Structure formats: C-alpha cells, structure tokens
Length: 406
Ligand SMILES: [Zn+2]
Image (cartoon, rainbow, N blue to C red):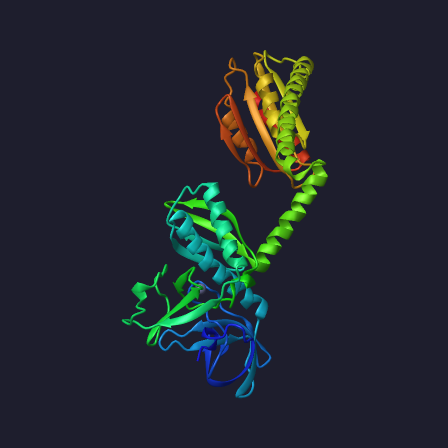
C-alpha cells in the first residue's frame, strides 16, 4: 500500500517485510505498507532508514507496481521501524507543488504550456513550448506564482472517476496523466487555481512553499528551459548570491546598483593597459632584435642568431624571430623552456626570405631528439615543442646550427 498518496507528512512508521529481493547486488525489501516515495513522475525517490539500515533507492516494480526499498545491507526481523529523510522529502514536496503553480502561471500569463519537468539535487527546471518570453512577462509569472503561495491555498489530492460527471476531460488538466490508479485518476487541486494529474507528494497548503524564484531562462530549440527554486533552496540561492554581491561591493567599494558599471570600467581599464603593454613589448623586442643582430657575427654572408630563453612567453619569442628575419641573410634559432628539468620547451626556427634553407626539415630533425617532440611549418618558418630541460635545448640548438653550416 502506498500511504504517501493520502498522507505526505508521516515520516516515521512501522511496517512488515512481505518480500525480500536483490537489486544490483543490494538487498531490498517490499513492505506491507510504505510512506517511501519511489522515483516516478519526475520526482526522485525518498531516502531514509529501514530497521536501522540506510535506504539507497526506492523504485516501483514494473510488473506489479510493488514499492522496492533498496538497502545498504541486510535488515533483521520481520517488523521494522521506518523513517523517511524529511529534509529531502519536504524539498521535493515544495518543488513539486511549486512546479504546479509555476506551470499554471505560465499558462495564464504567457499561454505557455509545460512539456517537461526535471528535479534533482543539482537543478530544478521546467520546459515550456514557447520561446522569446519578455522579461516583464516572466516577472508577471513570478508575481502571480508567489501571490498564490502567500494566499496559503489548500492543496488537495482527489481521485477523478473515469467516465463520471467529473470526467478528466471536464477538468482543466495541464499534463497527461502519468499515474492511473485503480478506478480513477489522481489529480492535485490547488484550490481551483490549478488541477493537474500527478502521483507525486505535495505540501498541504501553498504557504509551505515559502518562495518561488525563477533563476534563468534558456532557449532550447523551440522550447524554453526555466530554472527555478522553491523554499529552502530558494533561500540557499539568495544566501549564496547575497554573499557574492556583498563581496563584490566590498572589493569594488561601491553600492550594489553600481557594480555592473564598476566592472565595465575595470574591463575598459584592463584593455587599455593591455594595449599599452603590447606597445611597450613591441618596442622592447625591437631593441632586443637590433642588439642581437649587431652582436652576431656574419659568416659567409649568413648571420645565425641562436638563443635559448627560460620561462619566456612563446608569443614574444615568435615575434622576435619574425623581426630578426626581416634582416637579409639572417637565421633565427630560438627556444624557450621551463626552469624545471622535465618542463615543456617550445622552439621557433626562421630565416629571411633571401636564404634557401628548409626550416621545417631542420626543426623536425631537432624535435626528433625529444621523446614527445611535435611541430612543423613552412621552409621559411617552423615551430614546435617537446619535453626538454634548458641544457637539452641548448645542445639541440647547437646541433641545429651545426647542421646549417655543414
Ligand atoms: Zn505533482
């Protein structure tokens, strides 16, 4: 017997074990009566304790609908004391009832129907059959939803007899029935505001939901996913966001309303600094290139600039190689490696357009010295990397220079 249908509030009860089974290697029991909710209709299962043993999962058996309680270990005895984890159950009750109200509010305010519902420990969402809902509409939905919460309307589960005067078709039912009970259809009636066929657990009065907050809307094809929170989870969400905004206000020394503007100003300042730094780096590289060109001797009409840097930005090294090889008769063999012995090294080989060498082949020969060396490019410029210590990089560059002059 599923007692939670008529009573969602009893959490401690005694039951008799009528069957013992095994589910995926775990012992499981079927009770003569239960308040444990099995996963169904978009609502996750309850957890708790049976005979002092933790309940891992609760499912409904396909062939006969029996509620199967999956346990962490075997439970002793025939009659057992049971306890439903109330924090988890009440959270589900708040969100399930909240979802009914929210879905009906979207129908009334935006003519949008709910076509999906998802409830887990991470997120709670409904999917609407409409897109591009304006902010004002969403705000109106949220206001109506909370008005219904604060009016503290009674929430009643009723069984509608099929074919009777209260035929399912005569009642405004939003969702297709997921739970057909013997002799009728179970509907949840929120005091005339909404009537939905549902087999889940709900609060007795809407006031128990406390608050319903829409967090965000996300377009998904021709549907909209609405993320929302009810009750304790809405409070937790508010608490987290309040802590973050307080921190932002302290960091930016401004009022809450001025935070977006302060962040925008920081971003602009940062971009300006970046532009200035880029200009300064360009100038530094220019001086460095001129110095390297001046101090490198020319042999047989070719100047080979060879440098192994440590922990230098590889972007800068590439710019330096490009600048050096603007000078006719110049080869650049540059590399940068981490200070650590097994660090990642990066190399760039380049020459000025007037020289005939193939940098791609030379680079590949050099990288072959390292176990994970990879790279390539054009005859005039090639780049790559591998795991090599600063000493290994130095001897690799020496070998490449040898190959060039031979
Ligand atoms: Zn429900």
